[in-house]
Length: 483
Image 1 (cartoon, rainbow, N blue to C red):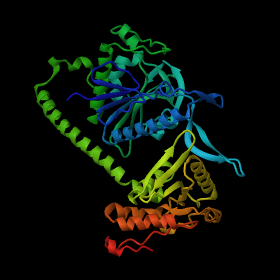
Image 2 (image 1 turned 45 degrees about the vertical axis):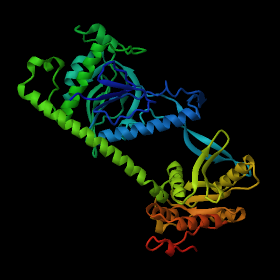
Image 3 (image 1 turned 135 degrees about the horizontal axis):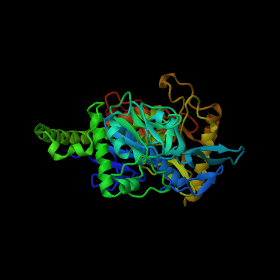
């Protein structure tokens, strides 16, 4: 069965390869072999500067963070399921992005909310801390092999003379097969994972144009790194893909033997028993692909099904999503709101038309303080100014204090100042772990009266922590305690 190969940011003109850009929405989950080259600047071009370096816009920063997280998750899935991923060790890009985190600056009545800035790690999608922490910029073309060349031997015989490096690993990771001439810094090799069956193969870039021009020539001198790598022609691309396929086969066989060179795959060398076994293997692999697809779909549903559990321990955007889901389960129409002027964590309306505005805050090891309450009150005033009627939305502060500790052992969720401020402004205070059991119950039982009681508990709480009604003992409407 022909291997399905996906290459991200490393263009290979071969019909067996599906070429993707970094900002593509296509998935890696269909791939048998993955080629990945960290390269983002062309798609998220920095438009500003910070500390003398380029800074991507807020829009591009958000897109880049999202795309990086998606690639990391899909690469992790690939490793988990025994796939081979070839990472082309390219030059690290040096620029800043908006981190997505916000902080208050200044004191008094008009503190400013600013978006924090952080350096972008182009190797963030690679789910290996050892790789990410050790990548260093450095170019050259003198690369030597080690005793661990193993499965890369045939590949290096074909492409070694045309390889150069744009970066190296400061510390060796896994089996270093290719190193710099001086200092023996790793530029190629194999890395394995403790909990995943897949293999990460690090390779230096190849000057494909030189391979095409000098194919068949005997030369021990590698070309200098080109300023701009030309496209490979189809014959060289096929040669390169075949070499990677043979490496993948050798890895899957858990063998240190040398992969078959391209010439040894000619029909006259194929053994009769191989043909039958390949046909049988193709059928098995088709079944594996179908089962893997079903498994991925089920895992995705499982992840979504557990979103509500984020009320117990999450912070930031995941906590906001869990709160919104819980509010919808309670019968509210709920969504976040973000436009050019405003950004609200939750805007929700009950069936009776009451409008509420919420902010969610998770704290690792402390109570939710008055800063978040101040932000909520500003949002309520801002929302009021935009509305045509003369009614203020009710403010609700969702707090998840001491979020990593067992719920029963946590201290007070809100500081004394936060509670005092909430009383003054009539803001309802909700402990998100308290919201979890009622949302879980309503997700499992159709109980409109109990849902209404929960909504009314939020609406009635002015400056106090919301106490939700007791769960019905057997999920019946008649046993709902309305408080």
